[in-house]
Image (cartoon, rainbow, N blue to C red; front, side, top):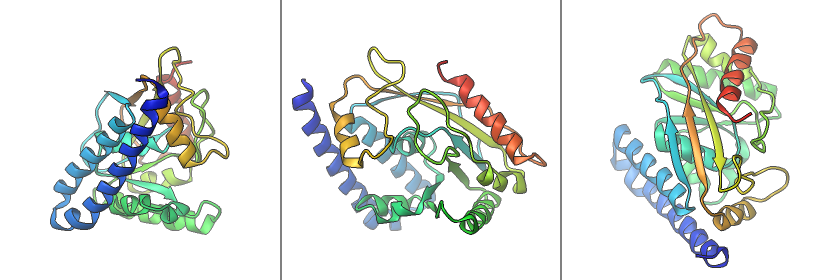
Length: 245
């Protein structure tokens, strides 16, 4: 199918699946226990990738129990990718996601922790909330680059949020994400940088052919008594080593 025909079908599928997700969290989630909600989250996230024709290839396994997932950030689809494998993950997200139409319902239902990125005081509040979640046995996920990159080079890692793992002695598990397409080890179709809108990015993804999302789960790192900056540097190196040079 040509891109001219493929893109409208995929965009329609994405919109309908988004509405299906809202209905799911409004009417089905309240009647399910945590395990049931996690199964639905895994199904919905995996199906969203399929709506865009993206094949997910996974290497490695997440450890059971509480952990802090640390991943590089390339696309709004990164969350779907991780939820396809680890649906219990609670993400730390920028606060303005709460104002996105449709998506905000889904993000709330996943137990997201919201962060006002410009506020140092709010960062302390979120670290405290993360620590409470980790102590309760939850899995929390962060993108320490703070924004999406182009996939060719990792951005600097902000170490502040890793303090929650250090304070609670919770293992940190890194995830390396990479989008590829025919002829490109790093997909130009999957990048979401600069001033590109979400709608424009969805259209670009919908036009792409043969997109593959590689998700590599790396061995956990101990965090007890670690220096958070040194821990962030180690995890960043882990992720860099798992990506094409």
